[in-house]
Length: 112
Length: 117
Image (cartoon, rainbow over all chains, first blue to last red):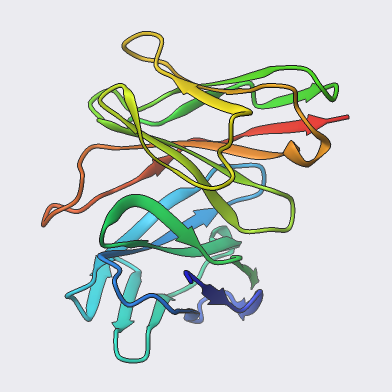
């Protein structure tokens, strides 16, 4: 099946790095995504990585993909209180682009 | 920055009533989607829509649900005879492409929170 697992909570101090982890079972994914959801808001696309890449960097965000272990991570450098939100990993299957399978989300809390 | 917009943001409806949730996808996008998130559960795919027809639907999307693109800008989800278990946040999304090297960036709206009582 299409199972995606994330830890539910992460707390960090402002200025530290945050690493949010995600594991998945389906190896046929083409794209893997990270979305952010602030309270009362929708799902904001943060970044995505193509399955033939190992790493993607976008300003403070670094995505690492280990296809062998089916592990995806999102690193946020210099975490700010405004980064407090729920972070969802999601992936598609190669044959059905656009149908995303989501994890339960990781609640990131940043302490000043 | 272009965004997907959804209305209403909140709706309370009585069990058995019909509900229409509306969405305006990003204007140059070609693929449209509905997802839902029941409180405390994962975001789940309902349906994808391309070229004025459903391209894929999940097992959740039964005869109670329908989608329509009534004009060049709106994309609607209709839920007939709502049940208590239909209470959820419903997200509309759109994407410009069908994948490939340029990516398949899928943008979500802010959601419509439906409460069935």
